Image 1 (cartoon, rainbow, N blue to C red):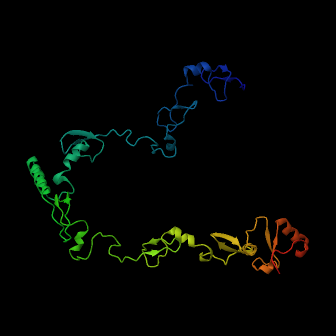
Image 2 (cartoon, rainbow, N blue to C red; image 1 turned 180 degrees about the vertical axis):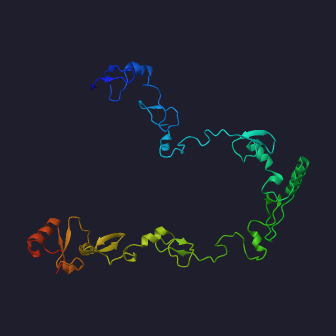
Image 3 (tube, one colour; image 1 turned 135 degrees about the vertical axis):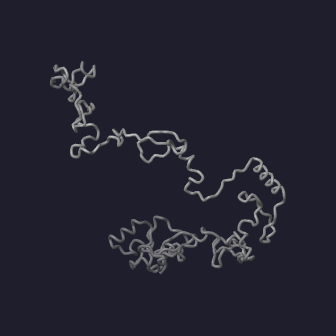
Length: 324
């Protein structure tokens, strides 16, 4: 634990051993929560007492430091502090006497304003009269609606022959089905019919890839789905076809996989598949010149690399796999 120098208490002026650097009063004064001296007044000149914060008295009240440059500023003091002028008013609605600080006030409360703001006093008043229906009239209207709904619904006025639906808005049967009102001037129109209704149906055709019968939507459709179309975008049919050349060698598509052309020609000549260890060498050094007279088979890759490094003749150690 760190040892601090002895200090004098700011309240009772006695020396004590502090436990921290910011300790300013002795333990006995701290237990009693005593504070030094009388409470000072605010430095702006308003005459109010300041508050205690972080072991010392503040110089100003909150917001009063702005009064040093401009004494008229009120800082964070509320706008109506010290405004004790009250005006005697009479409410327009309930004719009750009340006091307020607002000179323009005409009502004692919000309910009185809302009661007054009806009829001719309202801004949106158009000179009409409000009719209130009695319970008997409401019951008669409901009874007439029930009688109407018990009857069979009328047919659509466009002439399609389908019955209409009950309209809550008009409290009666509607004249048209939804969308059939446009048939009044043009009988050929179908209202909200589907976009492809009445279009020519095309004959079924077989897919190019899976040979499955499907119904095409357009005349130029040749595939039954996007998957079948994606399967055909391989090899020469692909948009990115470069003649089968990748880096140095040509490739050929056989049974859905890409094979180097020189290995395919050698396996076709030998009538067997080549092992992974076997490598095919181009005699003239051109990887795209794939002819049997230009190819030589090595039994392993080490032999192929030994030939390139030491310039050993082909017939000396490695006989040709094909006939002359």
